[in-house]
Length: 94
Image (cartoon, rainbow, N blue to C red; front, top):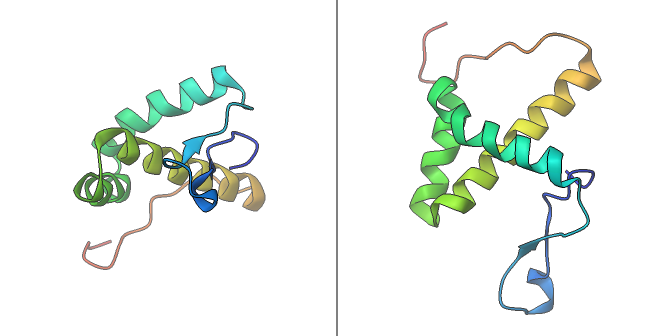
């Protein structure tokens, strides 16, 4: 997360709100945000994350939450060396 600078900074210091760090790879962040806008259409788990965050806040915050989840998926795939496989959640049949 820190590599992409999607971690929120500033909230702990009492400023107006958390902002995304400006020290980031702008091209990589743009690609990730665009992927996060499309991902909930194709992945039910990401759709649930997006819907949950939409109920809490605005659309941009929901997209950012999906982007963070995508980064977590990417890091897990990189660490394990295995291809990504969507796991069935508790309410879904396998």
